Image (cartoon, rainbow, N blue to C red; front, side, top):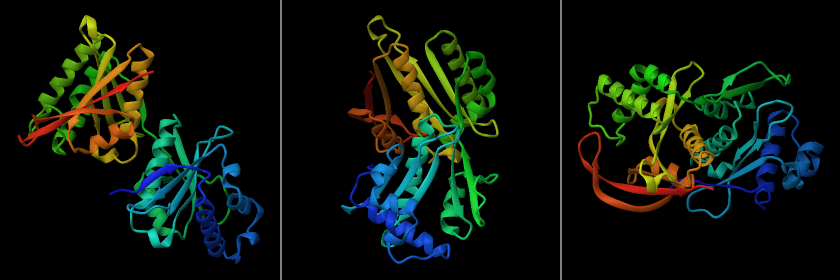
Length: 333
């Protein structure tokens, strides 16, 4: 079971979580106070009326599995003045720690920041907070030039992968290396994407070369994500209905995210990019299929897709074992 994440800046539990955060923060800074009423005005206002203070921001709450009340929170501040959105007020109650709540809150905040189209997200953390700092590092945050000169305060930033639609020529150019590597990685990690293991690089490259031909014919669109170093970290394709009575629909196929880039919301961003393009170009229905009980199912369900049914023994996984497949659809517009 996983933590339940919800957006709610008016939740009655939020004030308690923010109060605990600020009281501990004041003590760690050497300016301890005994009650909320003694907090600096800017912090006291957050506790007294978080809905008003964070009216333009995204407030996320995490509830542990099997529990009824949230035990953690985080705030994703809306960008302003040309600055990237900022993550603030990450807090998990001591009794609820070691249950993955902080990771779940950060993952959702990053997913939402990336989905908004922001090129990066930033945060600050006190240098003595080694555990949160380790979490931020694991999520890809790096230390950058300070925008807050308070001693011992580190400024960190995470840049998001850039997603672009590939031309047929670009698909051909990336086929032997970047795109083939994504397909090889998917098969090596056990994903059922139409190939048996071991998949050889020439076969993977040849498949993408055929995709380039479909893209040139207008039958398939391809988007790839580029990491900060220029390497391909993910890909998704949209296949258009080819029959006269099916031109209103499309199929999401080969949504691949490299193992090194998973857990950062990239799959959701790739899917959302393909969905937006499909809607903008007149498609009203999307379909896809995925191995039943695979991690991909959580992504599709979370993105608003509906399961239409399951077919047993539909396709073999890379090891050759027949697995069930679940069919999904999503109406657009």
